[in-house]
Image 1: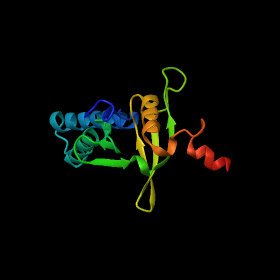
Image 2: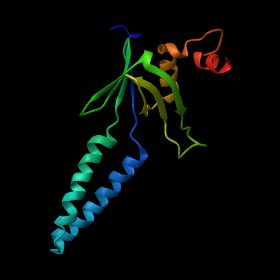
Image 3: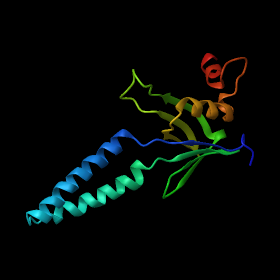
Length: 159
């Protein structure tokens, strides 16, 4: 495929998921220490924490990839599935971006509103470069094509 036909953006792991994994590992370390050195029966806490830690590691910390193909946006998760969003189905998007100083607590997040059949759905994307991601999405979606300098959404609300 040509470079223009397929563009890939890397996602980023959420801060909440990373914090939850760190606290799970700390608790797991404390309970394992108690089990090994003090002989306390801590298996009732170790096994669930181990399962939670593995789930957080596999599904929360490893980021997804966003692949712009010729006709769809594919959200590729590391282990389990690929979600496809047709460019024709996208009807709106919201973007929040984090900078290095003012918005330290915000996450890079793009909410893509699209239709699947007759249902309206929202997909949350967390790319590292949120501004380039939204520009690429606006360039490929027909809903955001410029008509005399305005998007179709602006033209709809003006009428």
